[in-house]
Image (tube, rainbow, N blue to C red; front, side):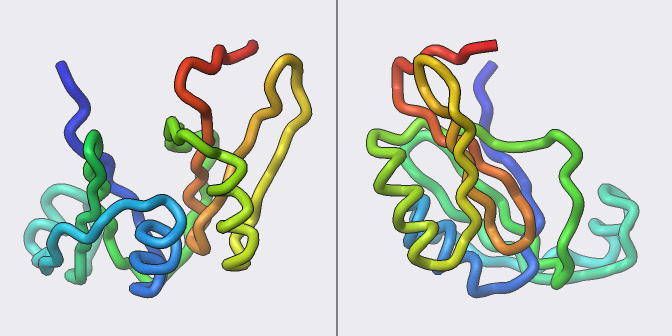
Length: 130
């Protein structure tokens, strides 16, 4: 089995360019409308709206424009990036929250988009400490 895509809510269309393209380096793939019927039948929401897909070599993100924030609980997406410090610096420069938790042997590093989606940044081969 292989993960194909992850669906996330976003609150503004600008997030596609600012956060997902400029910072995370996904490239725009396609844009479409979700119908009220699909929204109701699959997601139990009475709304239609825009959906953007962005991709990189390994993953597709399906970004649903909701116009509202959300609370996450513990859900997050962990991405392996070659230079996580560069990604974190770029996120901070664009005004996105960066969270660093000191741990040995490696700090934990997270960034958030404006909607509240949380992304853990890891370097390939980095072992997770419990």
